[in-house]
Image 1 (spheres, rainbow, N blue to C red):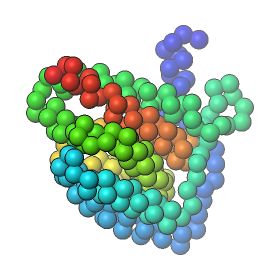
Image 2 (cartoon, rainbow, N blue to C red):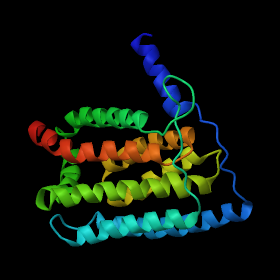
Image 3 (cartoon, rainbow, N blue to C red):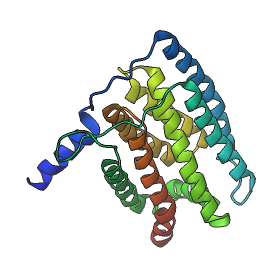
Image 4 (cartoon, rainbow, N blue to C red):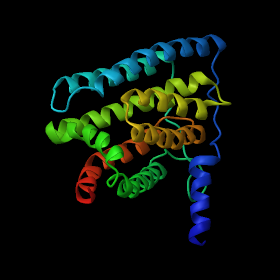
Length: 240
């Protein structure tokens, strides 16, 4: 199989063709999930807006971001059952957990964003807000920020591709969760972060539709976000 056909097959398996499953729930459970998801969204958006406006080096940032992760996670589990999901296997047969595909998608997203940083590094109006956000790792503890990145990445997927996705309904779940994720991120006031949320949100939303669970989105999100945390600062510094 040639590389183009191989890539096409990968995209179809990872982002297009859903894996069969039955996650049907009662109308009462569905309405309850929606109520919990809305309350969680309002509280989480407020905490995120506060956290992203804390000055780099201020230990309050750690408190705020862990609090945000707790809100997303508690709201997700309180909304109802969450599923890990399953992915198509490359060789056919019974489906497997969505790990390898998700790592590949995360690395592709990381490569795309690092390539884009070549442009961002040369445009101060785009570069400076991103640098300010990354200053939390420069002026604080990189290890703690990495832990925060992991914890919040998992919590965001539990909520946005878990509780919220299930609460929206099947027909428009990818579009709605991607839009809401981008709008919540817009409270940061950083345009490129909103763009990143929209692109990553779309990819993991499609993964959620295909796999029926949160494992794939979690792996993709963490691969991308940790890679950006560790690789983007030196790339911007070298190109600026």
